[in-house]
Length: 508
Ligand code: FAD
View 1 (tube, protein in one colour):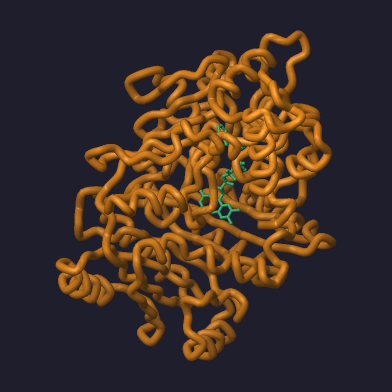
View 2 (cartoon, helix red, strand yellow; view 1 turned 45 degrees about the horizontal axis):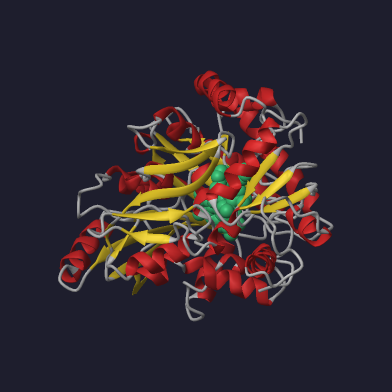
């Protein structure tokens, strides 16, 4: 663990709190929790994974329990000069969304230091798990698998906190069938002055506001997540296309079979763009890579459709047969089909290997001028021509995965704060750039060209995981949800203190 990583600071602080509670340090007898002003904590809390925005808080709060957290929030709220407050999970935001300039950053990971905390607790009948908001999805997976069960909706990368992804949406290739992670929550504990439990039946206004609510309405401390039996293995397939129309037609066909209870439906559908040797991840064996690079050279862009089907020992022969039938009807390039059988854990934790590789090359802790968008289906063909071919390919500066895959709007609960395009099918597009410290601006220039193209072409995109620059732009983003969003803010955070880094109600 790096000495300046968020988790490192949390551990150091928790140890010192533990010593204090045992009477072994100079802080013994400390009762009320106050934010720390230690320059090392302030420096760490001033930045995030994006490494582009710097916003220094005046203090960092390490709270052992929801009660300590609540007591700080309440006294801050009552103060005549209250400070802005941002919950900070693992700070995997890319534009300062978990920051609180001149305010207080709450280190959510510190809640994990409480031996009597929620932790990760699978119900006796294995139908749900209660998790502290500070827990990482990878740990939720590890613990639930021991009982042969697991959540059904994931993110591509599992080293993210439960509270952080539920504040956004939490999407991946399972979303077309099971909805985003926010559609898979039964209950939450949320701190808004007092800590309250909310669900579709209890304090439902708060429940729906908080899910996808960008940290605006309270601090999540616990989530109850439904579970399903975990598969023994998965068939993981990639199919290559040189024609975008054939690729997106097949993606849309594959997500059309999306009943959650239909055992024959696929479990995961994603897609990405291959632009060069560098975009080939280790899924493609070294023997296959040269001919894929040839294909990229001939086609300019190669589109990679990625699907997964779960199985257990008993169902495997049928799954294999059904997949053969399904693939016969698709329009991929016949010699460019690649597949693997892996464990469920290996599949879900696939990005970790990539992270470790990039870390080993010093390429993980670099600026990330990411662009994540939702693009309505009606605009995706034009987006391919104008953005993928017209901007990305021509600029030729890409250095990271480029994702494009569709999802079904009816799997998103419209009562939640999260906002998606107003069409039954929409695509998520992720231009996940990693840059140098001296050239991230050129990626921002490219991102601006993308916005400009969409505006001129009349494609009504929505940003995901990125703050808009002004309240006016946020109001356009939320559209018909804006009034409800503002009312919820008035109700739950009337002093506008929470998550100022999202720039919705605050300027910094
Ligand atoms: P932070 O960055 O710490 O916080 C994000 C926001 O949530 C902030 O506004 C913060 O104030 C608020 N917040 C955090 N915790 C709480 C809480 N307990 N209560 C209330 N508000 C809170 N996202 C996807 O959907 N799908 C993906 O596949 C995906 N892959 C990713 C891969 C990588 C490598 C990275 C870096 C990010 C990825 N993300 C993905 C984005 C990720 O879901 C968000 O950045 C998420 O916010 C990360 O959680 P975090 O704990 O780091 O949140």
